[in-house]
Structure formats: C-alpha cells, structure tokens
Length: 191
Image 1 (spheres, rainbow, N blue to C red):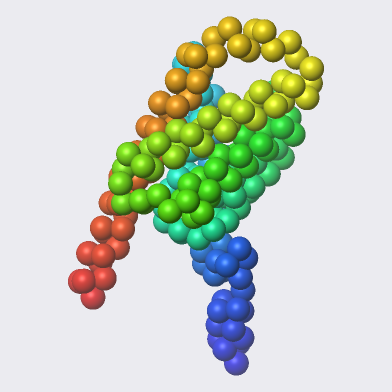
Image 2: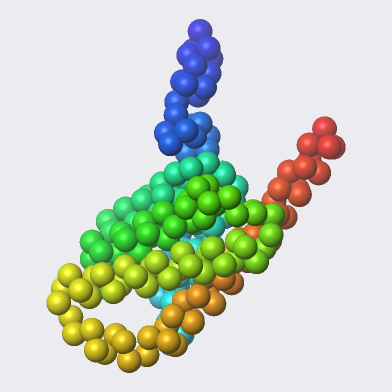
C-alpha cells in the first residue's frame, strides 16, 4: 500500500510542469550554482570570473531538463541559498545574480527554439545570460544611488569579459551534458 501511495505522489507532483525527479535535479543544479559562487572567490582580477560556475550550472540544468521554468527555478534556488548562506557585499541583491541569468536561459532554451544540439548557440545564449548578471549589478548600483560614472569607465572590457566567460561556461556545460547523455545511452544499450 505504501509503495502505491509513493508512486501516486511521484506521478502527480508537478512544479512548472516538471516531475518530482526533474524538480529535484533542478534544485541540485541551483545549489551547485550557489556553491560554485561561494567557492570561486579567488582574486583573479577578471571581471565576471565568478559567474563561470553559475552559468555552467544553469546552462547544464536547462540543457538536461528542457522544460520551461527549469532555469528560473534553479536560479531562484541558487539565489536563495546564496542570500542565506553567504550573501557577501551585495546582501539580498545577490539573489538577482542567479535569478536573471536563469530567466534568460529559460527564454533562450525553452521559449525561443534555439538548437540545443549546437555548441555555439548554447555558448551565445549563456554569454548573454551572463550579461544579465552584469545588468543586475547596474540595477543594484542604480537602486543604491551609486555614481554611475565609475561603472561606465571600463564598460567595454567588462561587457566583453562577461560575454566571453559566459560563452565558455555554456560551451563547457554543453560538452559535459553531451558526454553525460552519451554515457546514459551506452548504459541503456548494455542492459
């Protein structure tokens, strides 16, 4: 009787149109993004270098799940974990560093039918999603009434580095997901 009830819960639980298993995988990707953000606090002096692991996790989530809302949910979970575990200097606004790229990856992968089978399309979408993280920083500066002149001095370098790092994160996520899918297909053939 207990097994029957568990299968009913597993089959009828839906969040954003995802099954319970898919929602748990998305949550795992969100936590991995938050841990990657906390672990990559190395002073490399490259603008946007901490976003590499965030974009990698969010892109891998969108590629693996392929459901509308997967990136947004992963970004929400990652932002929530970051705000409550290690908010850093941004405080509550660190939440948007995860949520905006997650929403953009959802738009690119789920709403706009880009080809998920092409690595350069995923890289371009991830690069633009990483630029959304930069947009969140500008919104934070505007809300806090910071002088925007110092932000716009090196804007071209910052934009290019965010785009390149996001592209690299998306390409890495693409090849990792392709390898995982290939291993899954091989293991199913061996049964």
